[in-house]
Length: 394
Ligand code: HGY
Ligand code: MN
Ligand code: MN
Image 1 (cartoon, rainbow, N blue to C red):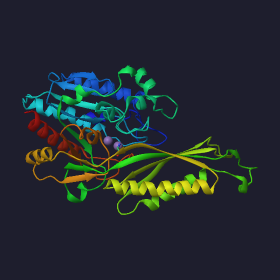
Image 2: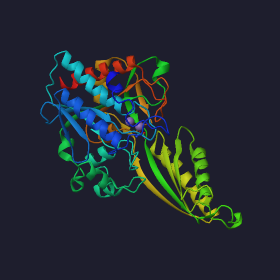
Image 3: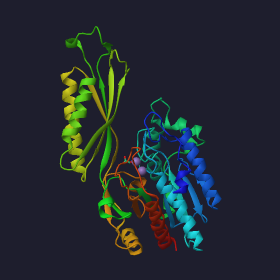
């Protein structure tokens, strides 16, 4: 997909592979500038809202708007499609609609949400959560990145006014319907031999931070029996996540940071992040409770302290059945898929009629460089999105 190829190389991560494009860092700012230029080239009026989300309007912003879009930020070492495919497909769908002489009868906007992955400040869908009031601005402003920079500081450097960051009810009330196109994350469409699917639900999921505190010491002189090494309960927590993931629950520790992190140093502190998801909220919470209990026991066994913080939680999302039926009316009997992946659409769904479209990912892999979608399937996704937008805004 030629528009997507414009983004190749931006934020390429030589150490991890894939892309690291975190909110308000140079690569992501470069993508914002690219999006703004592409939108303006299409005669769309671009505005940045108080929370750093970009809105490109076809027609005067107004009530009952049809909005589509996704995000441009990535996880560390992420793939090329997660987020950008939805943004690029929205621009390409505008091209297709224009080429047929279509003119929307309702305001239509392409949106780019900020910090969907939470890859820099730790809370997923930060831009859409701020927009809808799903996170308190006071908390968001104080979130820090690994270098200790706060979201407020980074936002100010990106030209936002920290004192204005927070709920934007006027912007939300303008949205009549929101549809997000996204690369499939998982491998349901490949065996079905279908390029496009409609979203049905998002599993409940959340993130927890466990901080283990022991006593730093010299690796060569501290007797094993005298140690209070936080790396031990951290390691047992990783294993507990695996054993807690039963009956379809997914529990993952993908991030673990020892402090100070020296090869010849017994760590004084270890931060561990747990990501847990399940088809039901009780299932998710049950798994988390099991991991936390194991972590607390392990900390006690090793003479360490442990502090547990819930960083974010999203309950089950069911996309608007009326929208889903309208999508099927337009697209025919395309598959309808649940997902374990969170999206800004999952946040918007609590406020406005929301739906999702997925484009086949033959590898099924996501949040990794192997994430993929063929040009043909991306084109099928653009056609599907254009048809849906014509149905909604025509
Ligand atoms: O974590 C997720 O499911 C999404 O990619 N933010
Ligand atoms: Mn993602
Ligand atoms: Mn995404």
